[in-house]
Every structure is written in structure tokens, then in C-alpha cells.
Length: 344
Image (cartoon, one colour):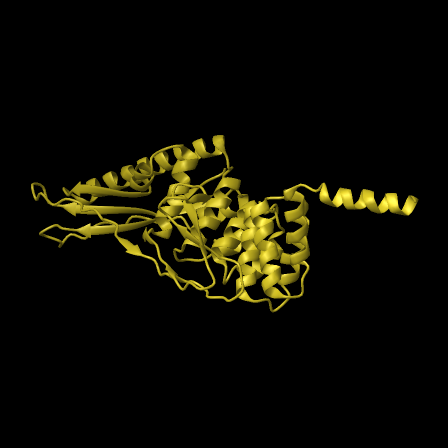
């Protein structure tokens, strides 16, 4: 009698499960399957359920997938589930996926509690890319001391002197930036798998886009799901940015001044109407002094707001002289090398 009552209670309890509980149980069962397509469906359901009970299991599957030869489409669905569940994974478990699943990995790194080392490696490139920018933006948000020191080490300070005769009317020109389109991302094609999640990064906010790394030039991500019978290509068109300009943008944000002002101060241009060598040298030295004073003022403001400028940091001023004089028989005097020592 007791056994019959226990059985009836168990059956009743099973039927009493809510639809969410039933879906969670199904996702859990599929995730633990040995079939890759079924595991992918389990990850797909887990991501759409947004259920806390499944978070540890999805994290466990990501940990296991890093050392397995899992199908690419399974990894895509699994990383999408991690993003949807807002998992905070160790950076070491995300790194194996960075090369192929760059955008999804960057989203997860943005949430990782120990991502600084990974971000420093990604941000160490000398050329522009969206992952590079996202990594630097995230380090900018953290006010990472190591990252900030590197920004200062790679900061370029210039001063261009244009020497002209009185009444010549020769001026100093400017520069412009261009735009270019990025390469497309080939979409996978699978049979028996759930819709495949394809993440892409971009500089321009679009319908359905979200921020992955905010900064002076914010990086966004867009998600598109592709069915197993679909072949598609994702492409994006974004402004081409210069690495040096981006670093200067971080300084502008820290100092709370417009980027245009920072750029003009770091790359100062002085036109000197020539009378004699002594006059040229006095004007040049005074212009360099004014440039240094302005830069020091910015860094005092940055130190007040954070991050702190490393003690002994040096900014080397690269000088260029353009001589437009008609008579150049009298050589222009040399201007000594200038260094601005910061953080004293």
C-alpha cells in the first residue's frame, strides 16, 4: 500500500512540473547526449530558456569543448548559449575559441572576471582591427595600469615648423580620413543542427545591435541566426580608424577634452616668418614650451580623474622643419631633442 502511494505521489509530482521545468529537463538531457546535433539542440534550448539551473552545465560543456574536436556548428551554438546566459567564464576557457569565433569570444571576454591578460595580448597588435579596438576599449574601461603605460609608450608627439619669408602667404595644410568596408564572414551550413548563431562586430550601431565594448569609438555586435539549409554571408562597412588616433582618443576621454583638441596639441604645427637664426630659435623654443605646458595640463587632469601616469614616463617630441625660404644660404639652427618627463 505504501509503495503504491509513493508511486502515485511521484507520478503526480512529475505531472506537476511547470512547462519551464519540463523544457529545462529536456535541455539538460540533450546537452548530456553523445550526439553532437542533440547536444547543439540542448545548448540552443538552454540559451533561449535563460535558466539559471542550466548555467553550470553550459559552462561545463564549454570547458570540455576546448579540448575536444567538436563540430564548428556545435561550438557556435554553445558560445551563443553562453552569451545568452550571460556567463562569466575564466578567460583561459574562452581563448581557444578566439581565432575562429572572434566576436562571440570578445563578448564573453567582456564579461570575464580575469580577462586583463587576454585583452592585453589582443590589444598588442600594431594594426587596426575590430577585436583590437574592442580589447583596448575594455582595458580603457578598466583603467588598466599596464595598458595605460603601453599607451603612453606608443604615444607619438610631433611638432612641425614651417619656415617662410615675410609676405610669402605659405600656410600649413591638413589631412583627412577615409572609409573602407570590412571583409564578410562566411556562414556555416549544417544538417540536423539548430539555427546557427553568427556574431559580427562593427563600429556603427544597427537595428538589433548591442554594445560589446564602449569607448571613444564604441564597438557593437550583431547576432544573426542561420538555419541549417541556409548559406549566407555577413558583411559590414565601417570607418577605417588609425591606431594612433584611437590612442589619442583615450587620452581625450580621460582628460575630458575634445579629441580634436588633443590631436592638435600632440601634433602641433607652427609657422615662423623668418628674420634671422636667433629669432627662429626663440620662436621655436617658445612654441615647444607652450606645447609641453598644454600636455602637462592634460596629464594633471588625467591623474586627477585616473588612471595615474607612471612615474618617469617619457614623451619624446619628434620635430620636423619645412623650409620654404627663397634664400636658404643661411642654415637654420638645430633644435635639440625634446622629451617631456611625466609622473614626477
